[in-house]
Length: 178
Image 1: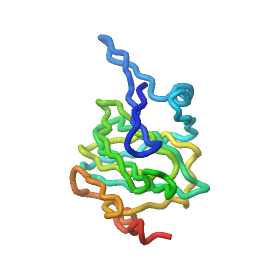
Image 2: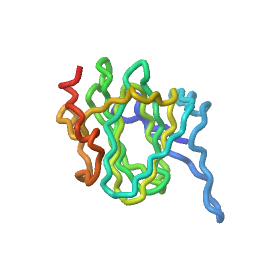
Image 3: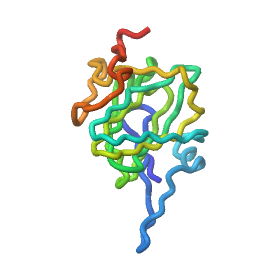
């Protein structure tokens, strides 16, 4: 695995290094020892799957507030997405900055998202499935979010969403939250 720093402190792109032969390939996608050696200690306790039949589906920008904050490792296991992380940590030198990257079943990249960073994605093709590895386990009822097109962040999405939940569409701007 290769760990690539991004412009947002603590957010990393993780690239698989598959071994390939005539049968196909095999790649290690998570190893606690490798993550710790890269300065990214992460031992997920929950794995979740988001299925998205339609192209243009937007999910996010989501986060869990402390003390229920989550760290996530996100990857597309089918299809293609534009994955976004937005730094909401007030004391961070990259507060309000964002990173966006394409994740696909083909490129086998993952995005590591630390606590205090909002996450969202836009599907770039139909039938895109997104695998989440999470620590600690998700605690329902403590989720929050910010609007996907909030001018406080200026995220440049590759397309306008065709489908999103009413909750995601109704999130308040970051500056309007307490």
